[in-house]
Length: 423
Image 1 (cartoon, helix red, strand yellow):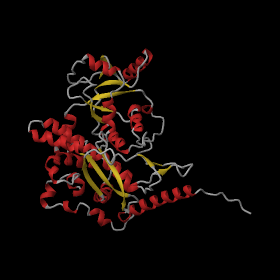
Image 2 (image 1 turned 90 degrees about the horizontal axis):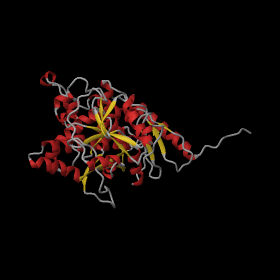
Image 3 (image 1 turned 120 degrees about the vertical axis):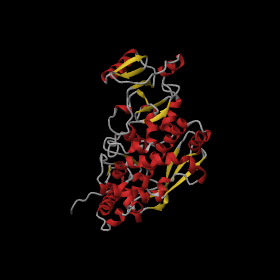
Image 4 (image 1 turned 180 degrees about the vertical axis):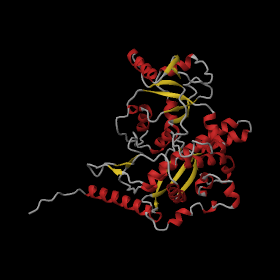
């Protein structure tokens, strides 16, 4: 009598799901009706005028993607944010191509109660014309299955007080008819984010504030749309949680922050109480151990993998971000510059100056180790905790007040954690 090995039900189910995704991806690649994809941007077919004055794909995205708010009262004030959001979607297209057109690896599970762990390959750096058209075709399908909601915080249901936004799966909206294995989603934006843009615009004299808040809104929508795409491409079961790693080197399963890290080189936030420069805007590399700990305390399920030092390192750098970094993105000419299109890292903020933020009380030896690491990266400490890239031309940096210096000595403030955890 031949010996047979009993296969556990969840193992067989996982194998079937992964094979189904692989079959669907191949079917989408080999679709005979290529005209559907090629005509996705049919409204932008070149006329004689358009042939002489071409416009970028971002301006012809599906209308649903260009209208994140379903309230007509917000449309006038959110227009700069929606336009920037469209450009960011276009810039992040290689990431969405990876999520839509590649087959993730599903790690083996020991028990049926364990979450599914999906690992995608690294996104391509650039896409050819056919890949862009195909990805936009499916992004349109996903966009049509997304509802946009602006909401007041409600701890009992929906957004918490500190949340900026969220994307929730809609299991009653399957997308299999569109060639996708998952479901539609609802993207909720905190009304506080919208009011910040409105208030700055209505004041008539706060153009800088309007651009800052609009940029944060556009980045939030990019973050949440990344989650919506994950909901659309992977089958989901109510009783089986799953975690997605965007790329083989991704240290966390927080896809939205992983997208921000790839697009901007980190997470932008306002840290006026910690940094000494005007404006107080900084960029912090994702992930860091304190923000991860905060998420877990709040009940967020974020998995980590690999041996990235960022997962355990007890300090980080808050890099100075000049206002022209985000203000230039509202200019159409910026997106037409050579080196922007097709370069996923083109929007990475410079790291010419930064403040080291330590998450715990440190010994002298630990302080010396931090200094040594910064010096090895060619930074010089010009004041306590303030580091400048040698040979760089940075703008004037205001002097620390004593309270700011004391705060930089301590663990990062609760505001620091909250700023990064709000999406």
